[in-house]
Image (cartoon, rainbow, N blue to C red; front, side):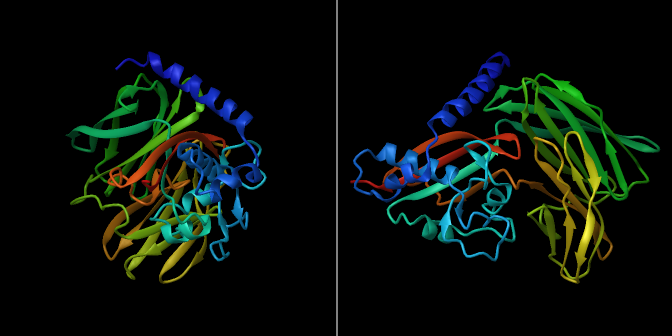
Length: 355
């Protein structure tokens, strides 16, 4: 589909932010909707509940960075946020069930103190990046891989600038910046002396607004029997700008760790180590798109690559309301939110018993 409508969509997204900023009130203004189960205007009550979650920090306000803190009330806003709908990177990451410090739905439900309301929340980039391997050409000294990169929002092409990285054992290479009208072919060349599997990481920034960014990670074999599935060897959990790498197998030996963004890349500094885990300091880049964190290593003789994004998105948390339409009133609310200056799409599904 043509990309001409995307500029309008992006412009509208920014207008939504301004409009919501003007609408934003304090938690005291929203609180009556949280506790007033008898409110006859159910859609309005549910909308204000979703706004309450996004506009309040929760208690304690630093619960995102401190997994040992006792969570009293639930909210995702960043403490001392400069604008409404600015979310805390760690509170968001702790909604992802893959994170070692993830909140359970029971914890969230209890601290919201709304026994008559179920909810699901999804946070993801405003548009999607998808990587597809279309061909591979094995030559005497190297192998050329041909990839197709799509940047779309619900099937509509998004014009972007692309930046890619290739990671393999003792091998890191960045590609040039490419312009894309929504569909682009890129070639990646790897020496045959490099052991696999390999990762191809692609970042995309919308040409009309660089704060709208997205990414995808593709694992391919290259000189290995097959690529490992994510989480096979390590459970990676970013929190408070520290990456915790928990070993799935005790025979694990780590090799390298990297932080990648569109504009920056860095080798991570290891700060702790044991026979069950290791921790790395995450640099704080001045970057509006997510940071992809990669750890490589060996399990006995098997080389592996593992990755995670910070903030740890895309994610879905909460109750599954997709099959609840016949037994509940389910309403959907979508917001444009900010995490570390990047813009994301946040969608709520809220449901309650039918009268």
